Image (cartoon, rainbow, N blue to C red; front, side, top):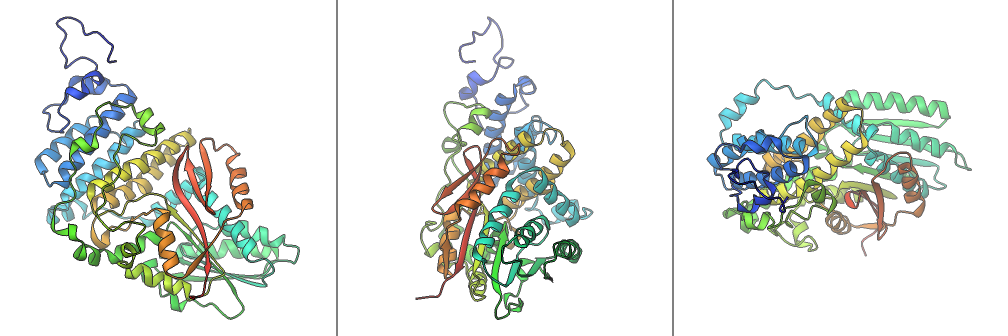
Length: 476
């Protein structure tokens, strides 16, 4: 558009906006929205929304309420939970930023939320829709089950601890694999952990039925508990049982328990490290949304470093709750533990770092969800609202123990697990082969990458989830 010639006497306000983005003040406090905003093409609108979101988040981080409010008003003219991918992302990010502002007035915040009914059953339904419509969890389950099969070869009693037991499909698949073993199936015990008894009852019923059909000796031990309240010592692991532990998108929530101590001890807690100069956030040359998604989100800056290096053990020793939990799991002497986590860093103390990282991560998720789900509009909306939207809100609007979505990258989990005494188990080629076979059934755009025996589940070339395997290792 930079090459377009403006007609004589035409006003720049009604001209296509992209060629003079660099002339505009990028602060949301521009006054009334320009008339051309509603006429922007999708990619131009996406670029503009990114800029407005980052500028608005910067005002929120700096506690500039008036400018943040103006920014939210501008974004509301473009964002929509029913629009294209970037419009929908913007709608959930602006809601999260608004919630964060409201938390500054506890009375107002509580009053506006006093009649809201939080339905965990809706979240379970959304989680199951996500499982059915996107391959991420299926891939994690396939990789985990293959690792369990290889580790438990020849074992007569196999005990699995499922740290978040809500989807029977994973263990039904494992039962089918075990029933086909040349030496016959083992006695299978699954200890399922979930905060809702009804979910565990459904798991027990479905898995018991499948075990009877396959003639597999089976026992299901339900434990009604949140993960942070779980007493690992109460888990019944008997002599002679070969133990495997499955953790799918769960461990990061335990980092919330360590937040208060980290905030008290952090040198940055006494200064405002949340705001970021807009010159660092926004590029001189604009990119379209398509380029933004294609180029691994090069438009956004790398997060600033406001804590110890992720490769430094010092940055991990300040998480005693996590360390204690992993040490307790190590004390169970598992033959295998498979960990799946989000491959992103949403646990920085700086709000702007979290906003930038969350934009990268969720833009990829929204994009792949839109590409995968062409017809199931209602299901997609539930996933975006009940899963992605709630996670975005938690990452951006919440602090302290209330902020549970503390996703961190694999490099940190490797250090934590090694410090707890675990040894890494390379995931086999067979596991990756089965995962790629699953992707061949209509999942275009998804990819699996192997790096040092760990697997990354990617959308295009962007890693979104990591899967790693571990075993009990005695301290030397």
